[in-house]
Amino acid sequence: MKALVYTGTNASELRDVEAPVAAGGQSIVDLSFCGICGSDMHAWHGHDERRIPPLVLGHEAVGTALTGPLAGRRVAVNPLMTCHDCPACDSGNHHLCGTRELIGMRYPGAFAEQVMVPDVNLTVLADHLSFSEAALAEPTAVAVRAVEIAAGAGATADSRIVILGGGAIGVLVAQVLAAKGFARPRIAETNPLRRGMLDNIGIARSYDPREETPEDGSVDLVIDCVGMGATRAAASAMARPGGVIVHVGLQDNEPGLDTRRLTLQEIGFFGAYCYRHQDFATALDLLTGGKVTGEGWTEIRPLDDGAQAFIDIDQGRAPPKIILATG
Image 1 (cartoon, rainbow, N blue to C red):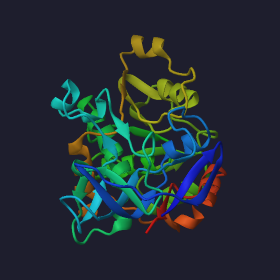
Image 2 (image 1 turned 180 degrees about the vertical axis):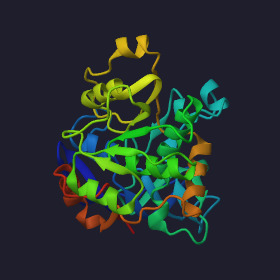
Image 3 (image 1 turned 90 degrees about the vertical axis):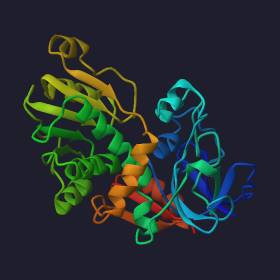
Image 4 (image 1 turned 45 degrees about the vertical axis):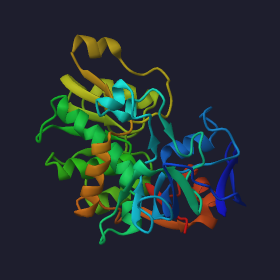
């Protein structure tokens, strides 16, 4: 089968690879679409020691089950594989399982014509939900988890909200916030192409953080979808006393978080990693109901163009999300 293979730092190529073979409790999915995630870019840049080339990346996938109990059904793939038998899993926090794995990390991913996943990781799609929209289920689940954490930490409908980063997660967080009844946020984004798209779809007010920034201590909720030293510093400064920072992005681990200010002003700092099963289900419900959509900010490209897509994203010539047509 054809697959886009990560071959080394800043390099990938289309190759013929062996098709997966399912064992007990596993299903083969004939893939239709798979989105390129920021974590795929992180690996492509050579910054993830867990992803060792040659490796098929990709985990934001949808398609048709070929084998298993859902054979013949249109499905979304939950790429997070867990043990289902530990305190985290037993409490519903499967994303915190100590032995969790992700397709496209140590296991072959979904930038391919087929992928193998556990049967329990498949969810049947509503008949009217297109594959291209359903391919946003996984990153939407990330956004749902971030918003749930923010709400649990005290964010309310009238909170003053800033999202750092206008990539796919930032856009989806803004849409989930709108679906949950929160006020329209501001989004910090340095890429003018992305700012233009954000303004056109109207889900947030964008700004260039190199030219302007919210007043120190003026923001109730900051959701950092970048996760680098500079954005942690910006979040630390703009959060109000008693405010909340939700940290989603994982670009680097450099200094920037002002722990002294967070302590003295009792600013809550919360990590948001992946999603629970119910967050994935909520994401699909939002997509099915049309409350979250890729219209106006996503682009579909053929798998054959995957290597160039990575280059275009890296060089800032791409929209917030490129989805590869794998089938």
